[in-house]
Amino acid sequence: MLDADLAALLPALETFHARFGRFFRRSEGRAASRKYLIGLALPIERKNVENIAERVGAPPRKLQEFLSDSPWDDDGCIGELQQFVGEQLGAPGGVLVLDDTGFPKKGIHSAGVGRQYSGTLGRVDNCQVGVFLGYASPHGHTLVDRRLYLAEGWLADPAKRASRRAAVPETVRFATKLELAGEMLTAAIERGHLPVGWVTADAAYGDSADLRALVARLGRWYCVEVSGTTEVWTADPAWAVPPRAGRTGRPRTKVRPRSDATPAQAVREIVRALPEEAWIRHRVTEGEKGPREYEFARLRVVEKVHRAPGPEGWLLARRPAGSDQAAEIKCYLSNAPATVALAELAAVGCLRWTIEEDFELAKGEVGLDHYEVTKFRGWYHHITLALLALAFLKAVQREWGKKWGPGIRAGDPPAA
Image: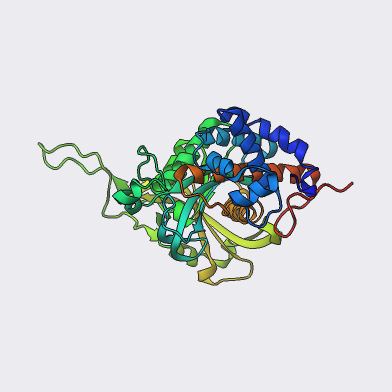
């Protein structure tokens, strides 16, 4: 049943799997989850139900039923996963990372599938899209939560909504990717298993003033990429509540710009105007390529939120070392206090590579995108178990002190 390379992992995998036993209602579910988890860790080229069943000695139909229909608690597994990751990788000032990834599909029956833009593919194509939450610290990084995005048009189609092959619960309502991201952030911070100081994301999420405000309400700092057209103020915008209009008019409550108010500016225009001495070189870790050097500049600004002045914070800019090309500059907004060091701000802003690497590892090593289920529940069950497999193998990697990644089988045993 077992691949020879997995033999060294099996005792640790059994201990790891036992942590999640209470989330499966029956012994059959616990047994099936163990076999499926083993299959995801095995060096199988295509980790669909049939291939996994053949390698681990399970009836394919039973394994398919476990994945698609068994009512086990995948959200409970996510909570326990986050506790495990907190124990293995947790560190003060840990960072939550948001991003989404596409899953190309040929059929039309899977939950949420349709022609939609996928950043992973770089184009509009027939696919499913998942929104994910990653965790990163000096000890490592991995994926810790997931949501399937269901487009509003897909949910509004009566035939798709009622499809037995997609089997989307009636309680599921449309949520934007930003709302799904907010759900995961809130749940992770409220669980408290992961020590979190920061949140980072690309401009698809960082452009949302509401998402940034949510992070602030949750008591965390953000350093998120924003589009170059995002507007801020570099000085006091000098907005104020206008006086009452006449003696009988209602008292006004909303601030309005005064005649001498400073106009807001696009961040890319602000950064382009910075003097050369404003740029400081820092070395940051950048994935498998190792440390890379960038030049950073920053200044205190006032964010523009829904056309009005918002919180004070940092505008951070990054460019490749030695480059002054405007097209290569990335801009970030942060609510971190004025006392935060530039090195810390720069390091957090550059951490998006961790979730991109985790997507690559999860798809290449634990079959994140190998599923062939069509049901809403099946997607969550497969993805949840893939996240468990990824975290387990990363913990083994850390304990054994061996490199593990694309081109190296996850099951390689430690050196004697």
